[in-house]
Length: 249
Length: 217
Image (tube, rainbow over the protein chains, first blue to last red):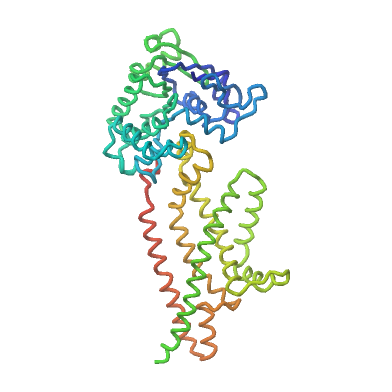
């Protein structure tokens, strides 16, 4: 459903993603693991074109989200890109809630402004989502008065409100105090059980093991491993992965 | 007590000072927005034009600008009343400063805000209007307040092009009565009283505008 095809990405001279191919199926939960600086966040951010790629293509349901015209490789303009991004939700490490809007306003912003949904309808939907992440009673609060874990759950509700085909999670628990990690992971686990398609960059090994259908291990811009969590965590053939995993034992 | 006789003409002048300040501030805030949009745009032409504008108005004395507008522009057929000329000069000048204040405010909004807005499919114009600018404006408010205080005092320069504002009224009275000490002290006190609410407003904004706990996100 979401595919990367021979993607190359550079930051100046630095070759961050090297000919990366990746394919995500409907209802699949893919966890991307790797040491810091390996390119895993960059990989995720290219999937909704927050990072532009130099070469290759990204396809959502077999349609390029980068090019207007595959033959001529003509890139989409920002307006056209914004249509593509409606279909791909994203949850950030630092939540990035809109601080000048209440929790409810954060969640209805996309549906009302982008999807042109009626406000009443968007509010009903938002309240349902806030209930689902356990924060309905906070709907008229501003983000600054919420804990990190609560903010991240609102951010998840905001992404869900757009009813996206896939949600990307960029280290969703890395900025949280340890005791707040669980509440966010629980919400993500629920979504996985409901069959939402998700791509998750994370450092939470146990969580990845639990929730992912597939693990992708990336190092220095190359995918070194792709397979089931069982295979990954019992991997002792590949030295690089063994070394990475030994850090978490 | 003849000092009280000076008060009505001075207060009349103060009213014109207030009008000049408020109107040129409003115009400056609007024009400054266009300037900063042009200046931060990717289109080179807009960037160059606005850079020249900002440089010209910040790099030359306001007094000279007022002189040009009131005394020189009529030579090429542009006639203004003294009040209009002062308003135009003050607003154009204020816009240049305000655009720089806006710019620092816009740059102070975390990049994650843009990314979050894009990730829910917002177009560039919508994300600027709904997400970036409201936050930037809030960050800018103390600086805009300071700029308004400077603007209030700068309106006294309009006396030179014969606008009947506070300073000009003071000069006229002093010239007629030679009571320089009393009159200019009264003028100074009136300016101080006019500026005081602005100072309070700046303090209020500085306290209120701080949502740093959400900003380190």
